[in-house]
Image (cartoon, rainbow, N blue to C red; front, side, top):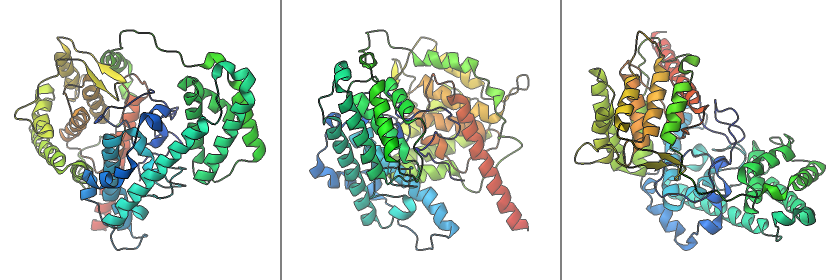
Length: 493
């Protein structure tokens, strides 16, 4: 089973999650990537005016990144061979994810679109023709890096073209009553450009919605309002593998233009104390029906066919930086020894692992100031008892006969606790994943893949996210158990 996001719809279990939903603005170098899905990018993420690029240096920069030093070579076997699928969805996809990580770290989140291929590539319905998917696009190291560069240039050229389209007319929301025909013309033109660039393949309408939302945002419409207006105008009339008829395009453009009002303008936020997302998480944590999802951690031990955590460190993290992978592998060995002896999960245990993750002389201390994540969009406060509260929360990851709670719910909750307490100055996402692996290992359960657990992010105050993570963990464990049982049946049969 392939667990990978498609932009034509929400990720598994994330009902109602709209793309184009993150805060408008800049990006912090080295920040955690919320996910690898380009459909989540907003105009502030991709606006070329906010993200200058030295195109002359692009080729050298791409080849200087960590993943460029370890490009996998496609095996010389038929595409129909199951081993090809395993390579494509494993080593090759992890390498492509690592390259996305490295490009975002170097240039910013706008680069995520380099893999947004036409039709059913890595992501549905994109405008990029120089990249398809790991199986087809990862060949030899030189050819692969040439494709990465070409795809990134193609994506960048598309963004710059869109920016010029957005500025075709001097549109002002305050003058919308006198300019509706110009707003309509621009919207119609943008739809047709997306139709042409995507070829109307699988899920192409996701990018069309995104481009129309970017246009309104660029012209001063509040982003949340823009997304709603675009949805109302499209009204579900775009479909995969089907180009829209001219009357439909005309009607959508007209509806969108007629729906605009001066009151839709973006209002500058008033200065106010920033919210404490740790408190929001603790409030949400207390309200979640953690037992509302069946537990795939039971029954009994689960020894998968492959060590999913270790293999992801060797494929994905090693492509970013070999030292990063080595630190995670050392922490994983220590974690499993701690799990075998039934250690209590607390900050001290996390810090012992984090010493290897960050390669510090000693266990790193608990942070002593507010922390920020997601490009500054989430802030986690600090109080004298914050560490003690984290320890109390993590204590709930152990089985409790008096208040039984499924293993996957406890593991997911511990993961989110570490994310939103954000105890370290760096590496908190890796620490959270290690905490999840430890909770499973303490009860003799292991993963054979990690895609939905390490390639997406969660929000401290989103009520859907906790049980979504539980469901995704269940999916991984169900598949690991199925594959292990099938292998046993083949051996004994």
